[in-house]
Amino acid sequence: MNRFEFKGRIKTILYIGMIVGIISLAIQYFVVADELNSQFWSDVLLNNTFFLGLSLMALFAPVSFYYCMGGMVHCFQKTSRSI
Image (cartoon, rainbow, N blue to C red):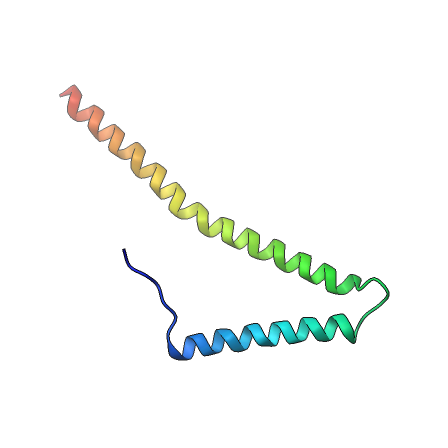
C-alpha cells in the first residue's frame, strides 16, 4: 500500500499555517475578548463544523465507490452463473 508523505517545502508551509492559526486564535482569545469570549468560541465551533463536514464528504467518495464495486461484482457473478 502506498503512503502519502508531506515533504520539504509543503510540510514547512503547512506548519507555518498551523502556527499562524494558533497565534491568531490566542490573540482573539486574550486581546479581542468580551466576558464570555463568545466570538472565539463561535469561531472554534464554526471551524470544527466545517472540517467535520469536509472530512465526511471526503470519506463518502471511497465508501460509495467500494459499495458500488461490490454491487457490480455481484451483478457480474449472477450473470455468469445464469449463463
